[in-house]
Length: 380
Ligand code: XIL
Picture 1 (tube, rainbow, N blue to C red):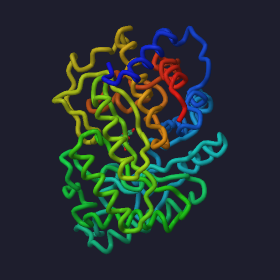
Picture 2 (picture 1 turned 90 degrees about the vertical axis):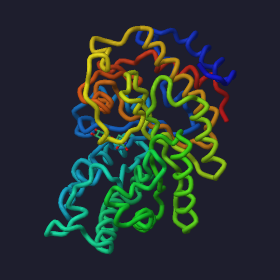
Picture 3 (picture 1 turned 60 degrees about the vertical axis):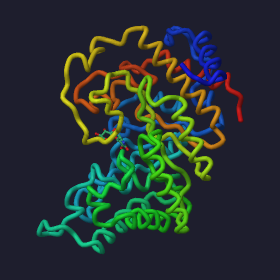
Picture 4 (picture 1 turned 180 degrees about the vertical axis):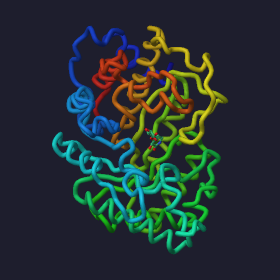
């Protein structure tokens, strides 16, 4: 399990005391009570929940979480589907829901190479847009979106996934081919202008990979060196049962802390399914063909896997508790296994079990395991 003796002891204790049949044991406290004031605890919301069509999800949210991120509806293709034509309907509902439930609201995301329409990078004749015109579109988009929710959204994932897995800026994508790093600075500047009180974040995945982390560190230091506001680094946390190692997770948290950056785990989930070609990234366009051996739990997850997931979540949360002085938020990418994006990534149509609640919205053994490990971990 963990090569850290204290964490291993905590995890062992948590599993002994909570048993493996979560649903049979009433929870002593909720997830947010167990976290206390160590960090915010959040969930990404699917469109059904935002529309009011997932009452059980809404109940889970109100009971266990105090922070929300929209899973899709604030992305460029949804919120500005045509040039200058904004569709704020679902984003407004997301914000109203968060205010009603007194949640911390996180905006996701302003500048990303995915889920951004092709027209953003084209003139009316289809030719590639000039640098100046693209900067103008980026600034206008950010001014409109951040400005609308000024004083309501607490923090924004300003730039998402600008660095490739090999540690290079994504100059194969139009944002960075046309604008280079300057585009990132412009995005942070525009977001700050639109809401000077909002926190601003850089968000990415696989930060446990040292090469990628080194470039991300350089980038966020460059943002800061420009005198721009940046409050934290978002580490997505799309993880598996045995990758990354606990040591790699800790190294990443330590490196950012040493450089003076707070970290947030922004998209936590733990896949229990095999990954083809050892692909552990979260680049949404990377998709593989399915095969029966790659989808082994269609009929249900065996008890030993269930226990393994509970152990994994317990060791992860023991690390979060230990690093909580530098960790401001932990957000799960979804609420229940039924709606997790991992059922469709990086292979479409599989049956994954990555979250703390099952397909029927019942708590899995991983939930009391997490609660117990938090209760056993000393508060900072
Ligand atoms: C995912 C959504 O959950 C899916 O519904 C959508 O089809 C693709 O995007 N990194 C991110 C998130 O920053 O925005 C992605 O969300 C998952 C990977």
